[in-house]
Length: 331
Ligand code: HEM
Ligand SMILES: *[C@@H]1O[C@H](CO)[C@@H](O)[C@H](O)[C@H]1NC(C)=O
Ligand SMILES: *[C@@H]1O[C@H](CO)[C@@H](O)[C@H](O)[C@H]1NC(C)=O
Image (tube, rainbow, N blue to C red; front, side, top):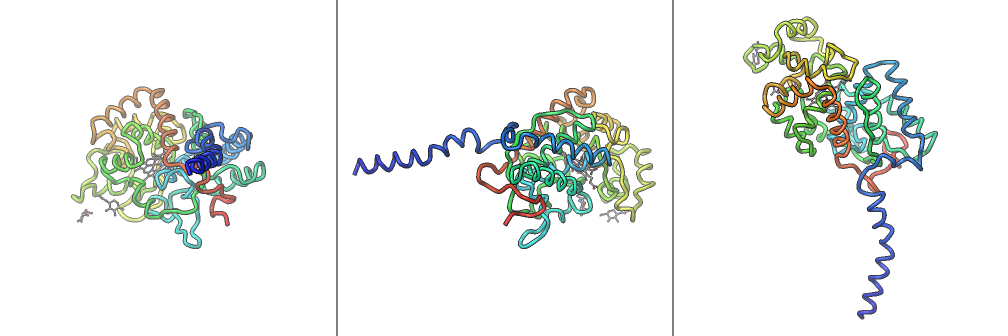
């Protein structure tokens, strides 16, 4: 009997040994060299398609950066945001944060089709978004970093997760911080990553409340510079013009720099969620000041926090799949 048990032990050791090795080298976590053998040109291909898209329209850099964020906050960085509605899948593209707002899906499609030609069934849509976010940052003048890779794509989406996990522009500081903490991110990550709003646009509807009726008392937000508020009201009326576009950082809207933080010091943050970083919390206020005075410090922390965000609950190993088309699951 003891011999038989030993035998079983031996068999199972042999059977699971490869798995144990994989746990160390391939499974569980991400690393930048993931495609070095399976698709050596992957990063170059992503970069060249992103560069072309950004050359055509600078704002695309911002849109691609945001896409990665909106993906990672819902079930981890698993490309769930890219799925269209079909069968039992209800697309996250319909959620409050994404509807009439999230963009860049065609660029992701272009990258995916270029990668499928080079090395079929190999590079995940989730990794494409992580790389595009980095490339977009670099192309607009921001910091670079090595992107850990090896994410796999989900087979489902979560509309409710998208609605509840992604902070809204009129959430309180505390609510926003709580939503970051639920993802394993802290106040340093919150402030640094909000620095993304140094590029890109917002619609009128995302900040109108501040201009007319911030607290239900018929008054504009008192933490908003009043002459800036007047300028905004000119193109963001009480009603109508919901989709009118405004630069998040009007000083250097297409340049990735720390001017966003300087604007917060001047009470010229566009979104309520931007300005509260300076007005509602001591730790956060200190960080805003630091980044406003020291661009290098901002760049360093931004890169570190992007890696951290990109590491939210990745599917690895045999979980999920490598989608053939980013908009739909395989099968
Ligand atoms: C801290 C909580 C955050 C809130 C409440 C927030 C909210 C928003 C809102 C309301 C817009 C404008 C959307 C529209 O009107 O169409 C926007 C745009 C944008 N957000 Fe955020 N955001 C947050 C954090 C982040 C983070 C962490 C990133 C990236 C790491 C990011 C990247 C961007 C970018 C790049 C844009 C411009 C997109 C474009 O022009 O297409 N945001 N955000
Ligand atoms: C935030 O904005 C949403 C959508 O416009 C609105 O329904 C909600 O009442 C606002 N929340 C607060 C606290 O003002
Ligand atoms: C402001 O909002 C409050 C509460 O939502 C509402 O009762 C009030 O009528 C609004 N005032 C104006 C001037 O829009």
